[in-house]
Length: 548
Ligand code: ATP
Ligand code: MG
Image (cartoon, protein in one colour):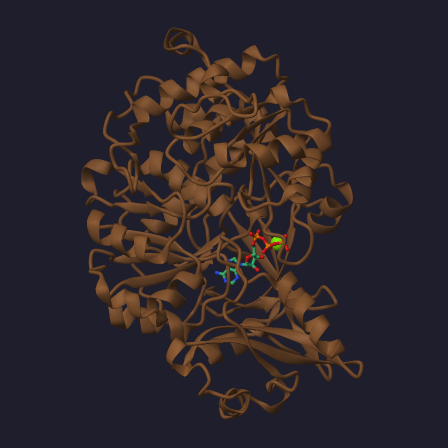
C-alpha cells in the first residue's frame, strides 16, 4: 500500500495566485518585505509590490501577448524580481527564469524551448540576451532592461519602466480571476530542472500547484504551532534571500511564502560567503533556507568564526543529500536546529519535510506533506517493505502538470494515475520518516553492488583536512569504480596525499565502496548556484581521466 501523509488533509484554495496572496478586502502591508542586503534603502512593501505588479501586468497585456505565452527573466536576484514573477503570473502568462550564468547556447535553448515572447534582462546580461534572441528569431524589440534602478537605453534596449503602465493605469488594472478549473490548468511557471542528470527540462506548474505547495509547506513548518501562520501570534522571523530566484526553492520562500507569512527577506544579489555571514549578523536573520554546500561552508570555512550568527534558530536544508554527521556538527557548534526537506522542480518545490517542532538528528528528509502519497518500488515495480530502499514515486496536488513541449519525458515521468517517478532512491521507516539514499542515475555499480556517491562524500567531509569533495563513477577496463575529487583545506595542501584519503575511506566503509577509481585533488567542487554538485561536469572529468 502506498504511504499516505500522516498529516492533514488540508483544504486548498482553488483560485489564482494573486487572489490567494492578496485576498479581496485585505489591505496589503506597507512595511518593507524585500530589502536589498547591501543597500537596505532599496526595498519594497507588499503594498508597493502590488502596485508595480499591476503596472507590469497592464503593460504586458498592452503588448498584445496572448494568455499562456511565456515571459522570461534573465537576472541575478534583486528586489524587483518578485514584481516580475507575480506580474507575469498574475496577468495569466507563464514565468520562466533563466540562470544568470547561462552562456549564449544555453540561453538560445531556453528561448527556443519556451517560445518566450518577452525577455526582461539585467543590464549586465543584455548583450547575451540580444545575441541569443537574434539566434532564436526573437525581435530585439522584445527585450527590456530589468534591474532595481532605472537604466538609460543600452544597445538600443529600453528600460522595463517603458513597458509597464503608469501609476494611474496600474491602479485601474484588475487581474484575471481564474475559476477553480482555470487555476488548475493555467501554467504559472516554467522552471527548468537543474540539469544534474541531463539537459534541464522545463516543468509546467499551475496556480493550484503553487498554492498547494505554499499551504503544504506552511502546514509542515508550523505543525507544532498551528496558529503561527497568523502573524499577530508569531515571533518575528527574518530571512535572507540568496537562493536563486530562477529556481523553485528561491521562488517559494523569497517570493511566495514571504508574502503569505509577512516575513521580511534580505535579498542578496550575489552569493559571497562573508557577505552572507555579515548580513546574518547585521539583520539578525532567524531562519535560513539552504542547500548542503552552505552547511559545508559553515562547518569548514575559518571565516565563520569571525561573525555572530547566533540569531539563527532554524535552518531548512534541501536540494541535495546532507549527511547526518554534517547536520549534527553544525547543529552542535552553532546551536541551530537543522531540519531537512525533500523536493524537486516537478513537485513545485517540496513534498517531504521534517515537521516543525521535531528535532531530527538522523539525516531524515522528513514525512510526507499533507494531501500527498508516496510509494517506493524495486526494479520490478513491486513496493518494498519498510527499511528497504526503493525508487520514490510521489502523488499530490503539488505534482506539476507536465514538461513543457516534451510529451515523451512527461509520459516517462508521470503515469496516467498521477504518480511522479522521482529518480530518487529512498528508505522509509515504521514512523513514515524518509531517508534519501541516492539518485538512481548516480548510483555507481561496483560488481553489481550499488555505491551511493552521497554516502562516500559524507565520509570524506568528516575528514578534518578536506574542505569539500565529490564522488563519481569512472569506467576502467569495462568496470565502474568510485573516484573522488577532493578539495583540501588550505593548510593541508601539499601535505595530505591521495593515499591518505584512500586509507581514510578504507577505515570507514565496506570494500566494494573503496576509491578504486582513484583520488584527484581539485581547488573547488563544481556546483550550481542552487547548491547541487554539477554531476555532468564531474562525469566529463572522469571520462577524460579514464583515458589517461
Ligand atoms: P535534472 O532533473 O535536470 O537532472 P535535478 O533533478 O537536480 O536536475 P531539481 O529539480 O532542481 O533538478 O532537483 C531535484 C533533485 O534534488 C531531487 O530529485 C533529488 O535528487 C535532489 N534533492 C532534493 N532535496 C533533497 C534532499 N533533501 N536530499 C537529497 N536529495 C535531494
Ligand atoms: Mg530531476
